[in-house]
Image (tube, rainbow, N blue to C red; front, top):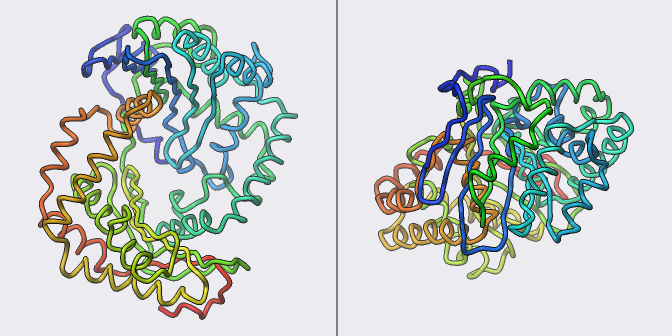
Length: 443
């Protein structure tokens, strides 16, 4: 049973239901359960459109490991109305761009165009996502592309180390697996398997269509309904999927060290452990803590490891959050001969923040960084569109900008220090990719 299979019903929409969520933001629920959210920004001359499906790599069985990412590639390969070339050419002919990405909990297909070309973007993107053919020849072509992508990823140790770290934390749970799949899972996967996954999981209640820019909500709804007509997503009455429930199978491993030998010029290190889920009220305190610890050039880790000692070009901390679990880590890339020293400094800083916490001055700076990065990140239609979709798909509601800033402002030193002690006092896991052997980093 997958994490999504227990999703219960939300309120059943007997007809098209539209309401205003915030200034400029409206939401319509179609009878099929598909949701449409828009934000009108009249001062722009562009529009961004995204089709977000609440299905990701954690929803795959072992035999389908990588199916979500495989499907993401295939949906642009042709429909009953358009060839693969026509899908890309129609958007590019008006100067637009389209792309997609897969995560562990959702998949997004998006386009950005001039405001006048939004009707075209809706028609092309809905067609691709709702009515793809998944031709056998295309499956074989994209299989080769994906296997090359996996091989390329292994040639990027700075990326690979984060996957190694996630596997160390989550073990055999789907959250610990590669989003792309592996050669062992992708090679035998059949077109019928992928098609069954597509039709079973890409259902109207799992879909959120979001758009932001110089647009009119009612017009977008009409365009979407017209594009959906006659496709497999044009279904009967159903309830929108509720937000992803917790999976009790998520268990984190005890602290461990995982070394992946690569003949690289740099050592790539991640040290950390379990974090917080995205619904945890302490996430605002964690956001402040993360910025103080390793979120910028003024952060403790950057100052200690790069500025004072020149031991690494890149060093930072981060927090990843899922519906029911998360992780926190510190990354550093350095010369292999300096790896031990860098690791000792990271451990010392984590020990210090766990034991002594942060100062009032650091709290103020950390809050400012969180608020500034959030607000400045909403300066384009693409980020506004993403905010709409993630609020609906991942949280089930939309927190206003002022409310979010107020939540950050309300964080106290005591709250940050409590989170620091909880997350960094226990066992830690270490992931290393570089020219090392198993015994080079004793526990």
